[in-house]
Image (cartoon, rainbow, N blue to C red):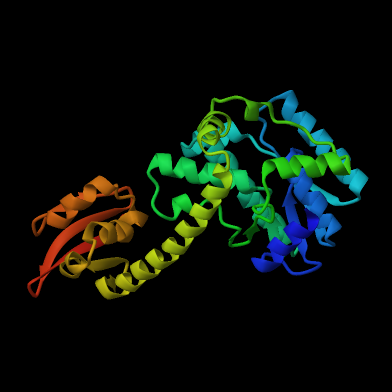
Length: 313
């Protein structure tokens, strides 16, 4: 398995040999496996552990376990405690989203502090499949159903080439201990429902579902690359900047093979819902709609219709 991960890192250009990396280490099976493999491959590892103060004594148990583990491995460890619920309340977001924001912001601070090449996190192949299914259920676009990316900025995921059962076999073979987050066993969160209920039912119909879904995600990713390239080309044709605002040439948008799809992609950064797109395409001159971050107004210039997008400050 070590060689499998090494080959994946090399083929996807995730890291260079002997790089310094920050590794998210929760103490769970996946992160313990990742940290151990990266150490074995010769990377200079600094572990980073977040205590989100969400599971009481269990959270403290995890922190103590990671501290002991890193001491035994003789690697440096950075630890932090977050008041995740307070952060979620202040920013009016869910607990999971709050934990994600806090975690990745701190990871980037550590990457800079330690002059590390990347932050390594332990998402594996099953996580990617779950993400694709969740995004499909939520109604995400083509990019959403491609699964988790192996590299996203300074975040890299060396274990995307392996399944959870391979991780468990590796830990058993190496005699490595880990802790279990009890909430992963509960089918309360949507991800856990997909993991614990939906995927097992699908595998009764399609035993090799993971292989099929992985192939599908690779195909989706290829399609998404083409799709995004076309969208970017169209943006250059139909958008004109105007200081802090911009003009979108709706006359040209209407000539595109899928005008609603194109306009949605152009307006997605402003929080426009897909169901609003047909209305915006057919609005009369002078009419406006507001979004969470902009005001959109129809204007007519030299017989062509434009959507004037003014950022709300």
